[in-house]
Image 1 (cartoon, rainbow, N blue to C red):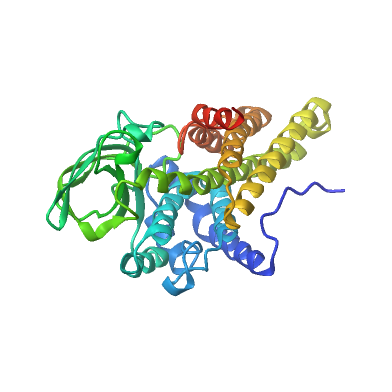
Image 2 (cartoon, one colour; image 1 turned 45 degrees about the vertical axis):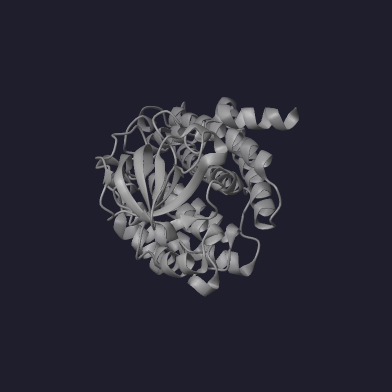
Length: 381
């Protein structure tokens, strides 16, 4: 009896998406994964081609060139990218979140203008939420948008913004009203707008193929028609959206677990010590079994969130659980993969070293594990 982890693909259409993205990453992403990590290079050509294949717009409507709001299909694409390069996943999903936000809350005119270009990969998208003094505490953000006739004048700073220097359009949370969550709105900002300035990308531990920048907005004039959703309702609207983001983080964590486990099993079958493959040793078997438990649990938790989100059900607490567990599991599994590969695991000759570095992000980005536990605790109370 051979162990097989949970598979998100449950329909013929999803299996076709899975086969397509697997072929694509094997041909186009895997050969360059180590290089784009080492050089900290954004693989724009990969993102563009994913769009051309229709794999970035699955959460959009068919009317706007998408896949008909296929949340599970989007998760399958995210998983297969993450197995090869988590950095590419991070940038691709920043793009997808931007598209999904506009598709979910945009006016017909906004959807017609932006969604087809994002879905096709013609334009690259991003989100600008985090600020130097408003990370997990989004309600404290200080970036202002002051109405001036038919425009908002935007001033402020954002930090740790994925795709900020390569995006054509971003979805940005700003303060249009008083203090607290009730004064926050969402704007669609085209990055060629005067006053939009992205810094040189940060040099990071992992996810190095995804550019992460500081963003300065200085007297950036944005048309009032680019208000996304309702004025002063941006915080509430973003809270509705976040379970999807956290579910896809869980997908990525599960993918890292699966890739690391596969690499470790294959290595342990071939590596011999004391006259036999090291997979014959019980201590090695125990480590591999624990890695499989983490993989299975992460994928089952995440699948539950995806199903609920796709059905329009409240999945906020389940998304926090999946993200907490998945982030910890990815760290444990990739660390054990490095350990099992020994000296080779500590080198760049094998990808487990890169996956170990990549895994750390997911207990931080998208809401830290500590914040997810606070959300969960409030639910218990």
